[in-house]
Amino acid sequence: MFLRRVARTPFVFWLITCTVGAVTGLVVSHSLAMARAAARRYGATRPVAVASRAAEPGHTLGASDVHVVEMPGAFVPPGAIASGADVRGRTVVVALFPGEIVLDAHLAGRGAHGLAALLPPGKRAVAVPLDRGSLRLHTGDVVDVLATFETPSPSGEPTFPVAIGATVIDTTADNVTVAVTPEEAARVAYALAKGEVTLAVSASGPPG
Image (cartoon, rainbow, N blue to C red; front, side, top):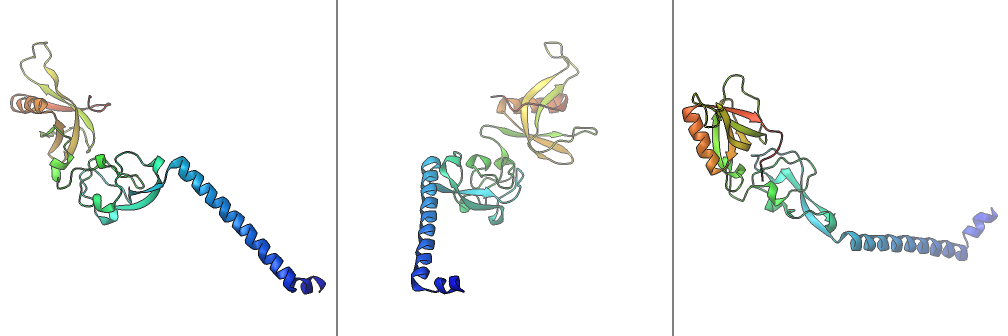
């Protein structure tokens, strides 16, 4: 009873109020100091576009495919896109995973669609027909294109590569489309016309 009466006195009430206010002020001040220190260490936050769901090469991004989050500048990689409007309507050229920061290099230029959007600069798209028993390939696989002729090459080998490290950019039930250099495109075309062509999966990426 005595403590209850004391707690009701104006002096005790204001003492408790001031104590709570002071503690709250200290906590807020400490939090602000930590936030300022983090900003100095990691940089001010910046908006970045992040993939909301997985997207395969060839997919055209829509409004629901990305969202924008704030991230410390130190963690934002070069080429990161800051606005959802800058990615909508663009074609994915590298597979995106949920939560991944969307880079300009992940997307084709605005207005590019279809196979043209998936072609790296300076490359050409060549379709290679599939035979029964051919490898089951997927977009993004890296292959060597091998040609076999009845007449052996000058080195004596009947089979030799006409394109190395070609990236698969499209697949259908009947053919595989690969991205090759202009010089390789000519050799692949000749091999398709005069010999037999086989695709061999490569463990490494394209050279260079």
